[in-house]
Length: 386
Image 1: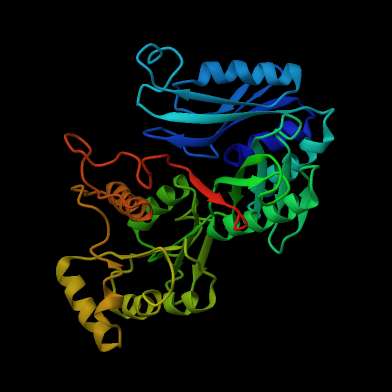
Image 2: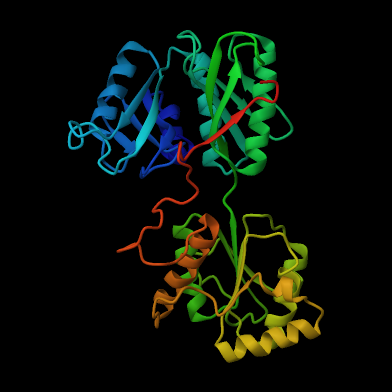
């Protein structure tokens, strides 16, 4: 649901009644992951997607029904020979979808969801937990947890349930994870079993591009397309301007290694070194390759790469640290233009993030959706007391 927060916040502000259908769990091959959502308002307008088109029409009607009767419902859609081209997933997957009405008369759920949507739309960290399976009177109830453990909302049952779920929600938030949690109605083994969906909302990950060159301009646009907060940094003020990089979130005129020493990075940050100049490359890569970040890539020919690695070894980097460097940067797409090169770099970042091989899917037997298991693509966790 948080993936369409920007528009849903506007619906809340206008006082509209609507329903949200959220993917809770998937197994096999499915086009959308847990957390993906389709929302429908009282006038029939729809935003988002839960299946890439396979079951959208049916889910749309379920949302309309939920707006009318105010009831949450959990539905399963999957492939079968009889339903493959009607209501089902022709790709062979199975998805569970929670449909939650958000009506102006129900402040209990609406206020919590509104706070979660606002956090997601403004780039604030928060985790939203919703009951997707359990006693009918608890279905759709929600709890919002912020960093530090601050809570909003309640499941209205045993107080220990709120506390136990809050602990798990914080763990999901720390990992930037969305998935399901199974727990007893009283927060442990006691009571009826419950299944909850926990959605994590985090600020956009960072892409830092060092080198204000023409390739950087194309990569800025690609980074924004992929949802990154993009910074361009170069020590040369004549090239490092907002006019040359209008799509960048931040323009920094500073020596790259000095900026990297003072700025905040984390495990989702990607660095692309496009300076193609030893006096810039070596100091910033020496720093970058010792940071716990997601990706470090550097532009240059194979000869440049060999020379740069020699200089980095002289600067004290080990062979193990050098193996983290993606250089020459990007996948082999035969790219020539800055735009094609940006696609090549972005493709490598996505492949490394999800464990993709970069090989063509045509004629192969490798998974289309990586990070999946035979019993489902969603993350399932159990409370430690179980």
